[in-house]
Image (cartoon, rainbow over all chains, first blue to last red):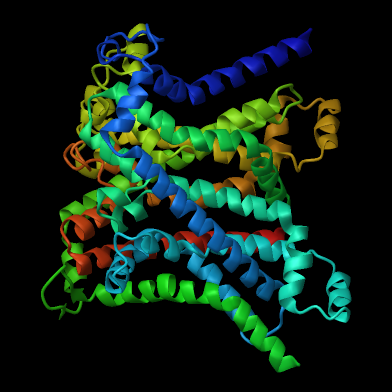
Length: 273
Length: 313
């Protein structure tokens, strides 16, 4: 009796917490379907009277969201593919190859990871404008084509692969590139997927960088596009909520598919610490 | 053979090294150089020694943004961690649906801050927002949220006849609105990390403690706390750095950006304004330098702590 009562109070607390966590999402979706008049009612109605699907179409039409989606997809896939390439190569070198200066370089990489973006933001802009890359995909992709944390994660994993596998491959006459391709990468699928997920989330949601390195409307990403829309339509909350809904939905769907992977990564890294 | 091995090592490292050198290392060094120049968008560059720093030293707006950032971090981080540890503890019990709760709590973390800011701005709307409607329902008057520049200490101490102003007035109600949103946004991540730590505690410890007649608080104090205190410390440092670097909510939510009365102007936003609105690039780098020093001290703090922990174990 006492036990089950304790369980119930536990669930009540957890559900209350969950409600607070979900309230903004609920309110976003509910407002997205309201008419503007309905949205401005106070105190507000919890649910819309009619489902105004037209808000979504209207928001999509007012600014060029389809362009922003395409740009974001180009940026995200570009950086993610490049990060895969640069990270596996670098992680392999750090984990499996011996050469002078290896530890120093690794320490340098880690030190670079600690430095937050605002510190190198202005000089990066100057460099990109010297390259003539401002307002191009190069500025969105190339500076982010290396992710040090991914290198770190992959290096840790590559080191756990048994040495015998490498020895056997060397005896069979495979070179390092072939070893990486045929042995290491197939054995690292879980970590690579994790790296990919974090890349996608980070790129999809990145804001300050695209805000600074792009100017024209046709180069806007989802996030800078949404911020622009929020300034242009600062009082039309149904449209703003509709835009917020369709810009966040792709990631939320992805998240529900991969949440187990994310939780396991944290659980594992927690164990290691 | 050895030589060849060396070459392959460097070859594999080359792409990453190139990008890091051009887009991290060089800009960082360049940032230091630029802070000694009068560097605008056009016109000649002028080496001006420490003038940028001298100007920074007496810039009231900079001090205000540092003060705002201090209050922001000082509120966001402890609130986030307290709430997270509380919920992580609840989730560490034997209950059904744990996975579902965990998934829901983490949801804000994968949602973009721009979208979140847009929605929270609406939730906190002074006249039409749902939060004020809820407050009214329980008999509390509407709060002006983003329009209110009064400090919270100022408000709470006024009835006692104590008048504080400036930094001592604490975060403004407007800044506090940003604080609320940041806590909501970050607790999911902290819960997951704290929970991962809690799950390292062997179940037998809890069972043994219970057999010995320890109550909930004793168990928390003597079993849970020692295990998760390093994790709390880790969260304290990483969350402080994240909070210190806040930019997006200020840009999207506040009106005018950084206002009212400059009370939501956080230091990274000030850097952005100086560089990309006013194009005082040299001066902006002096600000970046100060940001760097503060973050550096925070990370050193963290590093020392990790070393301590290795020794401890």
